[in-house]
Length: 486
Image (cartoon, rainbow, N blue to C red; front, side):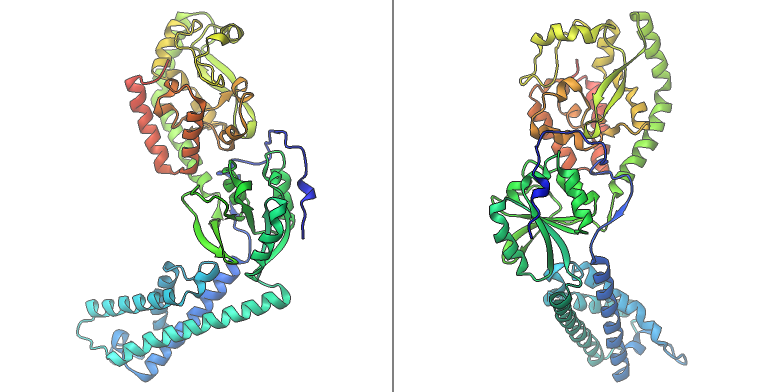
């Protein structure tokens, strides 16, 4: 049962470029597991049962004919299909097709079918007010739908349990990551559900950056679709949600000091044990395409708008001091991959050499970032450009090259990243941005890097296209007010 030796390695940090942005996979994937087959089977069975209920109601009454039949025209049986679809959609919206015990929540099923019949009755009343629907007919259709669907769910549940016991068919292939002393207890509790095939266990070190690639490859080899992770193993590793989602794997967090860590989760029980589940969407990677498309289109518009400003700034830099117009600095981006970030030159050409001599004047508390309010290396035009953040405009080229996004954590020099603590590396798990929450929340006035990390984490956990719009608008206001820049 256990397979922990695979992950017993040194936990030294290694930059990896083989995995794309955890929120942005390079191509779209479908969630793993047999959930598609189970969902299609359940919907098909419900459709047949609800169609049968309508046929029975028609045979014993004039209910369907009163709603749909016109004098002199025979009612085809396909006329029931729209009615059945209304019931199927209502069952879906009530969550009765979700995994686990929600599929067999008979109160939800009864509620959904009652709402569906109420909707059908309302449509008939509003659009066919002259038709008198017999009460007995309507009640018969409603009761038959409830009885047949509930009976169908009971039979499906019994057959599914039998298949899982005898042939391990339709079971969820899962893996456990926890402390070794807790593994036996967790296995015992999960096996009570009788719907999981446990392929092995691994210690918390399997989630370390140095080992996570090997962990994912192992899970893919075993065709694992769900992973149970102990709380002690997941804490301070929140970015792993995107890692597993990228590969279509659902994760369940086992408790031990529970506290909310993500907005999209559900709480249910596994073997009587409370469990937080980070449900994996059916299609993963949509966030990437939404954000990438927005970045590309918006960047093209910005470049067209800023072209005269680019030319004016380039001329001003040339007239102000000797040296190139652009300054390309090595920054650390996604998964520690180094790239050259483009900026308008705001310092003397020997600024990098002088930085070592100025380290003692660094004003940040922990020394990770390098900030000096009156930096002697900055040129006259450079002060103006920095005040209005105009020196950052060439980074739009980095966005077009796919090295950056319009919004995201700011990429930092290697000198800063080398001083990172373990939990700081979460910044490297998404594409860096031209602007971000840090920039619109004080920028250079924030001298504690832990505040920067908290802002980056807030952005990563709550990303949406709307949030990107809000940050871009706030960036414009902050720049115009000259807040927190020097």
